[in-house]
Structures are given as structure tokens and as C-alpha cells.
Length: 293
Image (cartoon, rainbow, N blue to C red):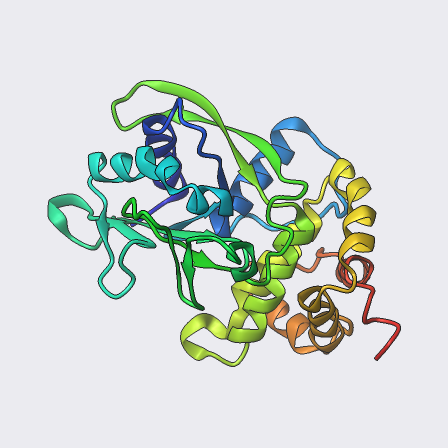
């Protein structure tokens, strides 16, 4: 079974292997939320909400690559070499943007999966990168592609640095830093992920996306919240931001909205969650549609 410490060791190993390069890894997904909760607790930071969940379990690492790394693809060489050195293999059908490190004795059990993602397809206009809805393919190829995420137009804005420390697989203690998306960006991605999954039984009806969205809002620090108005004003007419506002209104603006129902269905849900405050903050983040629909 993969645990958060297993994933932390795997991420440490990877960052250690690319130490000295200019590759900045932005951590998304469930493990990014785990790192954020740990960061907030360790530093006793004030957050938008007081009650936030224990990080949910996850089995993979979602690693965002800044678009310029794919545009200037030779900069990815240290990362490709690190993956090979650490024993990662491509995932059939998702070659070069999903990798897996088999578990003990080559089994799937206990393995670690990495998904590489990047910013919107529009980031690659007038570049040599070939991009479609599934992947961005650098030219020249360095053996790494990335899945473009159109709902992350603000991927590189307001990212925060968090410490990452612990024992490498070698047993050596090491300390470094990685980066997390701004809650504005993180929330937008989760809104779209929820929209795609709330009726999908195989994906737990999007319950974990609803939970993640609550966690992101709850652990937003005072510093992050102070920078949110600039992002709101700058991007409020972006099509994906406007669509995010519609999703908030449809799923998360009423206690009986489907998003709120799925949140309450989560096995991590607690009665002390600040539901009204959560809904209010979401509508503050994505207000461009709120007064128009």
C-alpha cells in the first residue's frame, strides 16, 4: 500500500536527482494538499477556515511543469535522466507523460505513479511544441511530455514555496523545497475536475474533488488571500474563470447543490466543517459570473 511517507520519499528522491537544475516542480493533486496542510500546521499559520480535513490518501504524484520547460525542452534532460535512474517506466497508452515505478519484485502493488501536467494549450501558441487535448510534445523530445490543463491559466501566478524534507531511499536526510499552486488556481482546477466526475461511479462521484476543494479553501493563508483580489480582477473575463463562476453557482453556492452533497458524502466529512464560509469564499474567488446569472 502506498502511504504519504512513501510518496514523500519518492518525491524527495526525484528532486534530489535533479538538484542543481533549473527545473521547478509544482505539486498538485492530493499530495499537494497533504504538503499544504503540513506546511500550515508546522508554521501555525492563520487560514481562511479553522476546520479542515485530514489529507485524503492518494496513490500518485501530480507534477506540473512550467510551459517554458517544454518550450525549451533541453532543460528537461536532467528530469528524464532522473526518472530512468530511479527506475520509472512509461505507462502504456500514456507514454511520456505518465510514469510508474513498480513496487517490490516488480509488482503493481506498492508502486509509485507520476503524472506530468502543464499549463493551457494556449501557452504553446507559436512555439515548436505540438499540443492537443492529451499532451504537449516538446521538440526536440527529451522523453517527457505533459498533459495540458486549460483550466489552469494562472498556473505560475502566486505559487508558494514549501519545504520538503525527510529521508531519501538511501537513508540520508535531505531538505529542499517544492512549489504549490495558488489556491485560486488550485480551486479552479478542482471545480472542473468535479464537474467531470460528480456522476462517475468509478471516480467516487467526485467526492474526493469536493473534499479537495474544501481543503484548498480552508488552508488558504492570510498571505495567499491578500493576493487573491489581484488575480480576481486580472482574470475575471477569462473564459475558464467565467466558467468556474458558473460551476460555483451550480454546485457549491447552496447547501443542497450537488457539490455540497458530494462533500457531505465524503468519508472524511466532519460536522465541524464551515460550510457557509466555504461557499462564501468560493463566490468571492469567482465573482465574475455570480452577479450575471
